[in-house]
Image (cartoon, rainbow, N blue to C red; front, side, top):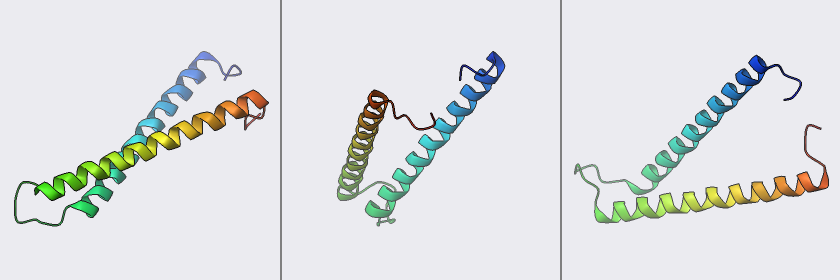
Length: 90
């Protein structure tokens, strides 16, 4: 990024932020759709049945833990690559 002038750096930063937001929203939408499809099956009431609510809570918790674990593994791999000097793109 040092080879870019300040305007190019700002533009790159803005694009990266937009991509992160888009990726987060995509992930969130998939989580909602997955848990809805897995847990909600009674449309005769405006409110969730207790079993549906419990299912949704477990589903969200499961996905959240999975995302955290993937993020930690990614950080570990990234740190190992940086220590060994084998960062991609160099």
